[in-house]
Amino acid sequence: MQRMAMVIGLKPEKVEEYKRLHANAWPEILDMISKCNITNYSIFLKEPENLLFGYWEYTGEDFEADAAKMAADPKTQEWWDVCMPCQVPLDTRKEGEWWSMMEEVFHHD
Image 1 (tube, rainbow, N blue to C red):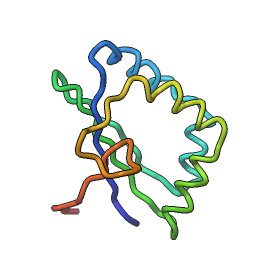
Image 2: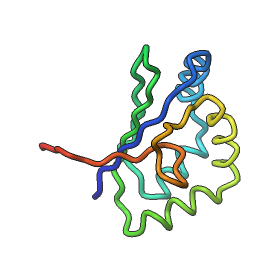
Image 3: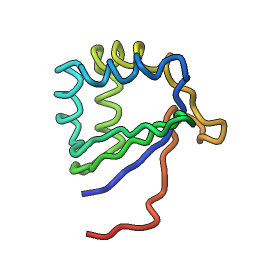
Image 4: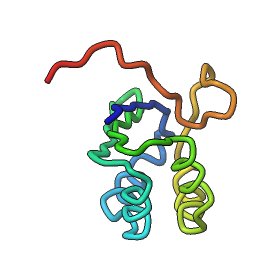
């Protein structure tokens, strides 16, 4: 199991919409997340900075392949089309990233 985290900004005028979307996440999206070996997935919001922090545990063997599977899914693409206009990627993100991946520097069970 690999713990993974990421961060992105959220447009202030989109905070309530984003909360509503995720309070009623589409079943097909939740199913695809599970099919791609992602468990214990949470998104946290820090206001007033409007930063989103995402965390999940990856239980598969090939994250890049599972991420590609998710990205190729038409329903996931539709979900992203709804969510992405709410988000503000960090200027410091790596090439090809939307959400900026984070390095784990500490963990304690």
